[in-house]
Amino acid sequence: MLKTKVLFVCLGNICRSPMAEGTFRNAVEKAGLSDQFEIDSAGTSGWHIGEPPDGRTTQTAITRGIDLSAQRSRKVRQSDFEDYDYIIAMDRDNFGSLMGTSSKGSQDRIRMFLEFAPKLSETEVPDPYFGGQHGFDHVLDLVEEASDGLLAHIMQDRNKHG
Ligand code: 4NP
Image (cartoon, rainbow, N blue to C red):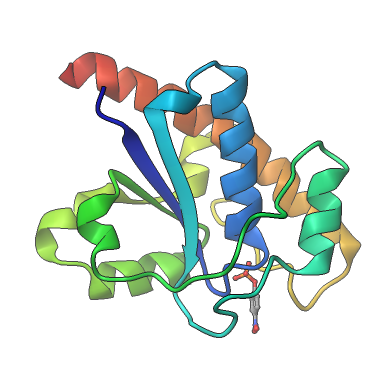
């Protein structure tokens, strides 16, 4: 079976997109669909290439049963726009960078993550890097809600397109 490929993108790939990747991976696993997905995350900047997620990211994720220890930061690459079916931006800056570097043909793959959490009042996942613990907890609240919505959306898309 052809796998659905999902890439989560933020600025540094050490806070938000690692949490999104881990949370979505857990949701996919819980739904028994792990063999049908390929999931990764990347940053629009190359500032933290090769680094594990920020310690606050890792610790916060652990409190919700999400293990990020295998993740390492990487930068978005041009081939991602062909390789991934869904390229999910955390905020409008990330979205703009992705739209600016992708080819025209792949722009409809690029989406804002919180589109898939319509019940939330927020439309962006805020950058927690320069703030306190509350920001990291808040990111996890948002990405948990949006992960379930994204998974439901993908399964609906698949039914529509066969
Ligand atoms: P992220 O957070 O984009 O959610 O990974 C940030 C990580 C690092 C920096 C900014 C945001 N930084 O300025 O190094």
